Length: 125
Image (cartoon, rainbow, N blue to C red; front, side):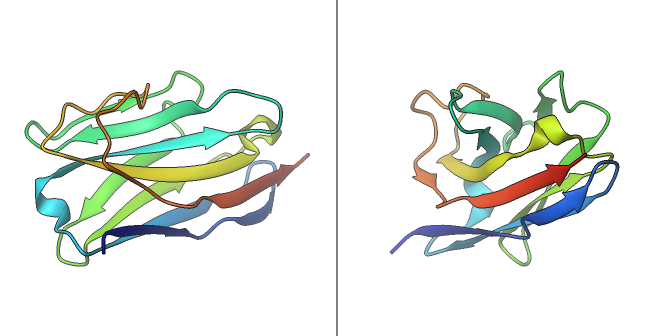
């Protein structure tokens, strides 16, 4: 079975850092584009960052650009999201997603085959 499992969320003060991890099992990330999404209470899911495997092109939401970094460790079959200078508005459940040889977008409208269950990130002011 194919799974994505996120970890690394938690409570952090404003200005702090967290690194989210996403472990893939049952498939090889070498052939998958990946994305990170988040959803805050009462809000729509939004794309945070994505990486297209065929081009290694990365994209970031304007609200996180310069603060977050997406990366993939193919040897470990892991996806990471390094989050720096966190702000209270970054508080949300964060999800990773993977799509086979797809053009990654931050809309998440069908190009991703697998989704994780999410990890909570809470940033206190």
